[in-house]
Length: 246
Image (cartoon, rainbow, N blue to C red; front, side):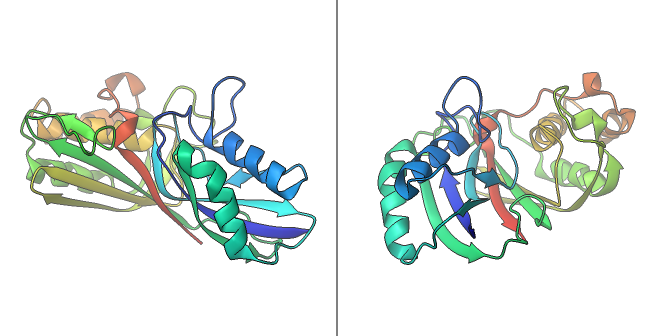
């Protein structure tokens, strides 16, 4: 058997997330279907992790095994993208890997980015590519709140009730925040995240930036470990899986 890694870009707007569901179109399901047809054998695609409905990816990572070696990777890339591009999916790279490689379990770091458009007018060109927030946000307060999230903590406050992770304890290596004109970009780096963790943290940072909360309230919510005290999660359209590092 031969193992290949795919780096995948996609717009998640019209999909029910990455993972195959009983109903509705998913990114994993569609790519798996096209690979099966192209390679003329049943293909199982393994992703680095799931992304929720409406969430995008700049560089999702996945792998699959096939019986025959793919001789011309460039030709294969053109062929598979012919079937996927119109659906808002692109395979940007394919690499041959050893059988020890696993897209999920070999990952050392996952980087997510969240985009906020902090302006009065609704974005048109970048519609569904960020969270439109009209009320002015205090960037300094957001940065102070973000610092409190870095490190090894119990992130139960930010954990979805449907999360299947064994433990709520995770380690956030870094949070970088940059702003250009009316666009705020928040980058989160961790080996793994709880379901809805990033969107929930952004929702709380937004409350802080709007001054609905002060730093004391923000910290109280975080340390409570109670989901009920979390601010409403940020919408999925602002979230991007940016990169998986091995």
